[in-house]
Length: 513
Image 1: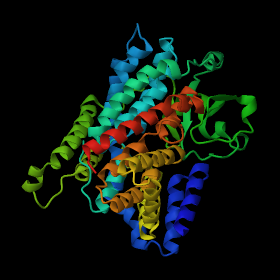
Image 2 (image 1 turned 90 degrees about the vertical axis):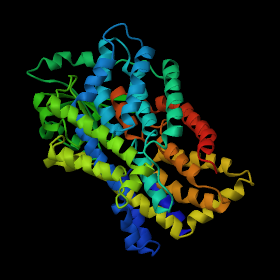
Image 3 (image 1 turned 45 degrees about the horizontal axis):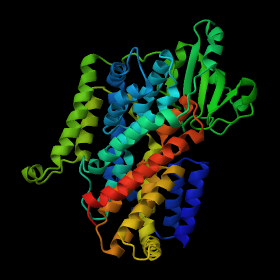
Image 4 (image 1 turned 135 degrees about the vertical axis):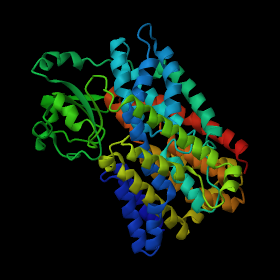
């Protein structure tokens, strides 16, 4: 009962978003340690988990690929120069976006592509709102296809290994993830025409005269969690003096707050600020962790030589191939003392990228999302507390009793719905951590294989479509596309149901109970 009470407080704190998710979960884990439910060793185990460290290193690999500039060149080739229609462009672009996000962190993919797509749509006299939510959804769908596609998969993979089971191989989740991704993309292409708004940015024309001032131009930034004035009033923070830029408007939840109304407003994570700034702003703050995205309406210039750019891609491919081949039985027999898994190859790839300065090695700490790592490590501890206290067993028995002996299929659907609801309200990693011990206990009480439940958690925790707050990529495109909350619900909720139906139907066929 104590664990249930503390977890309820943790969930409320995550929904209210007064502190970063990592600190909220760490607070809960520390309370469990103080109550004797967790030992200090169990509290710290998550910080040394291979899955968590793999996520940390993948941030650096993704940054190396981002800085290569090849992703933006690829998108340029995909976007037609004339005769474009929304459906034609989506059919061309979305499958490639999903493929890329299956191997790279979703956030840099959206950060690179979103401003480019918005500029292109405006040049082609098309509404950017027809492309930006589909961009975010395509990255999410791509992420469920591989072990490294999203941090959630690696978190569940780590928990599976800790529970004494064989973890996922590189493409194992793709057996169901690929089908969900294809069906999801087909739905997006069909539904975009009817369910997404058709809005154009009229305010851009209003600033043309202002841009004629010496060397200033329009810049859009999306505020990140590290922005120092989060939750402070606009009037109490001298943005112009600190950053050398004037705020023209704030965009939030589909509303535009202009200058004379914004002084009483507070800065919030995910807000898009439209600024008037000179070239020095991009140079000083373009790579700052304060902003999730910075766009000045111009094409980004390549940051490294062509040879080094291709080397970044080659290293990424070698990492993926190495981790895939390393899981084969022949490789395990060839070198019995070593484990050639994703952790091994991501370590090697990160170090080589650092040696070759493919990402700025002296500033490597700024490219790692530390709050996500603390969230993951604390999630492991909270999951262990749920098991140690008997809470997971109690909830599992209660769920089995409610199902009236309908078998594991109904409970699989329940696990999906609960995990998916949690991921829409807070973070995907926290949702997976709360669902994992309960799912394991359900499988043990029923005497069935827990693997269908583990795969279901991976998919449900990633399938954040009906809310902009559940996934960072949704938050980014909400600001740059000026979407309302209802826009996500309208197009995203049916996609949640599609994922639920496909998961419950397909997972038991591929991973039998």
